[in-house]
Image (cartoon, rainbow over all chains, first blue to last red; front, side, top):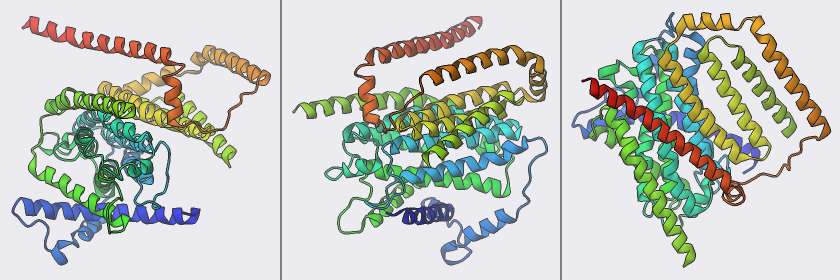
Length: 318
Length: 170
């Protein structure tokens, strides 16, 4: 692609990601309704799809309030960090053989870096709010995200070992014969869990658990600033789905249909799966969450790494 | 183009570090420090070391600084902490460290004049970094791993002792 095309594609991608995240808010509530045997939002427009517009108008026209006891500059900056970091993460995702913005030879590490920077949004929001619930939510999220980041990166090293590259395009190309979801099923499992914990969605949404922390780190936020947090969270969901598709389900690869259609189908299926997880699994206690991370998931990733290394060496020798 | 980007990132790094040193609010200082680390990552990238740049973001900006912010949140220093910091930052306390740093800077400038620093300007791929680490520098990797293991054992020991004590009291 020429430079101008890349810039155009980038703008389209930002619009699509933000729009997709907005529609996801409605879609998730509708789908949850179906699975829980109720309607969900169904009043505005066909199937209630205009609910997104109504929510947007409400959030945009709300009073943009900063509490007098908050640290003003940090309070305003915090919600933007997660949106910027998540949108930057999309830069390395290959949507088709020629449809990408950046093909870095450290693409995978770039993605990990961006997700780890998104933590600051939650952390600084909790710190700047000067509110005990927000502070507790921020503390929880810091501990949760740092713990789950450890094996999030490690769970992907099996994929890197089999491909021999950090470039996401090379990883997709290496899956022509066999998608990595089969030889790397342990990696897929651990990355999936880490992905949910990183985007702190239910069942791992302890930083904002409403029955114990009112609303966690965004207790003091309202209007557009609150909407930015929600946008960031849904962008995170989209980004994690895109990454799982790229790393484990062959990205754009697939017969008959054009590459971008295959990519979209896979991402859509994964998003539905994430929503199903939210509908089906209750929230664990906080100590259970940390114990799961360190005592089950980390050993599993190390085991996966060991097995992958042994098999890769054996195949090389054969 | 590359030179402009380099000097821009270097300027941001210096400015952010300076601000990080002089802020009285610990949280603000940490945010400037994070910006400084990100600027250094950009510098690494421009110098042809993308792997080092990525690690700078993932490990320093993404993990270590998160723990720093975590500690600041746990301490919850508030307004009195800011007052105390302001007292400590008085001009008198700057004299000795300032003179020492100036001497070091002078030394660095002289050293650079004698032998100008050169970079190859060729991008180093992650694979080359790995081969170098586990080839000629494998001893350094092993020493680092021993150090980390010692840290891990130490942390385990500290955490363990307090649990036992609490049980005995019961």
